[in-house]
Image 1 (tube, rainbow, N blue to C red):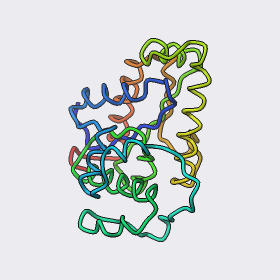
Image 2: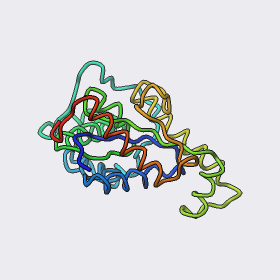
Image 3: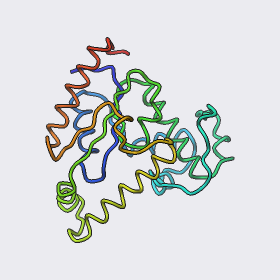
Length: 215
């Protein structure tokens, strides 16, 4: 299957969203970006990748640097980053990196407000991956090595951090169905099933919208 779409994936912690994204990218034969966005953002902005990782998808308490004003930074204007608080520099570096990889062509981007960053792109398909708590706990214990007694609390805290980050920078509600084209429950259809559903949805959407492989 070929595609002309850029795909973004929001996900609950422990839902398997990252793995779903990687499998989908392999199915479609397109690049996959998760932590890879940090390397891209570091290269463009000059901010150390380790610092990016330490602050990745972390909520902030400082005043919002509004994107509503239309202010954007570019690879040749790194000095603009240096005049901002660190958290804003990191977010905007990732913002630019996400737009840069989307400019190159179809890809899968996990997290980091990708759906918000690319909301003006008609060929952007926005997914959200969820699962029931028991399934998420099993995945956290089996794949992440979490203590079963502490897993639920850790999952809720991770979701809260992601929600705070998204709600702050996207000025919207993380997990709100109105922000996505399709929400999928991996505890209902499984990881492979989620990939099947997403691939079919993308094909139907592109057929309906009339997108080409180079849209």
